[in-house]
Image 1 (spheres, rainbow, N blue to C red):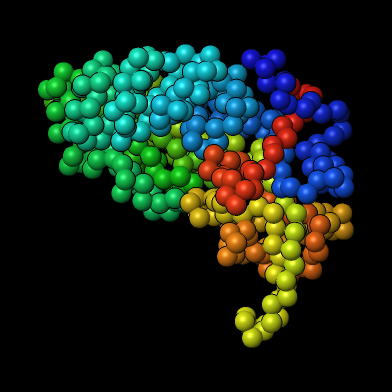
Image 2 (cartoon, helix red, strand yellow):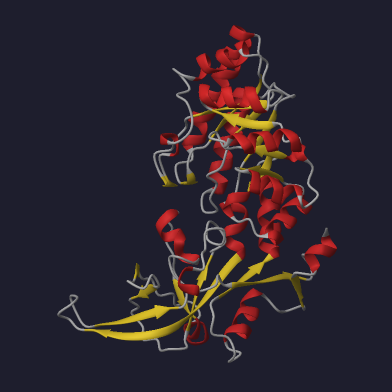
Length: 396
């Protein structure tokens, strides 16, 4: 697989880094389209951090976060498994040569034909949270290994209220649903939860693990059901990862210390790939806005990527971004100018920056690898930005 990845990745010479590559492309004089630089070494670093901080938890990479072929190949080569939500994602992972037992079909609302496809492909581990889903699984994948998803929202997440869509009440609804699954002759193997994408409240994991532990005990005592899978979902962020890991490890030690046969998995996406991507955009239009239209005279800048492209994350992922003018890097490296971005009528982004920039100037956006590329479109005929994959020689 390494040889296949190498065809798509540029190996850097010693002393050259991602920022050098980015500046070289942007300032070449021939580049006008927005583009990404993706540093493979960042993904390797994040994966190694995960295995060090959460040694008991096997990552099943969330394909929906960034389904780039290179990303999937890197994750597979590192040893990660995969969280898939559809037939298309399953097929994409299987095409890499990944075996079906390394996939969890973690979508509680599956299309019937996708369930049938998973059964034929040998993808047996699937999630559920309703009677209707159990009926579909009974008909189309009766030998599936079922994982019950419980509700476990945090009080503070980038994408909150996940349990409005998926997950049963762990105290009132979970046990009756487990009982129903057993009565139907289905094989329930575990419990899963998701505290919300980009979770900022680390104690949410502790609460969810307490609920899960109670269900493990109740299923064993009341149904004779000894479950073997605990899926702690996603929601992992870089800026609070150490505290999150401390909370998880403490709860695992408290509730699951003696269960040596338990397989603990998670579904990280953002944590693995966000920091690997830097987006470079170019100012393509400048307009003066009179004070009659806004509070004061302003300069309006249009860049060559927008909310129908890489910045869809502003609308659908509740993301915040920090623009870094490339010429400022040359002038004052530590000076970063913050701003709010507003979608224009032409569905590009308008930036109101404090510093005057001109047509042809470049603006960088770091940590743009999560929930950007898979949802980019060709709206108005603008193709998604090209991705330049690089890797430091020592990491390769």
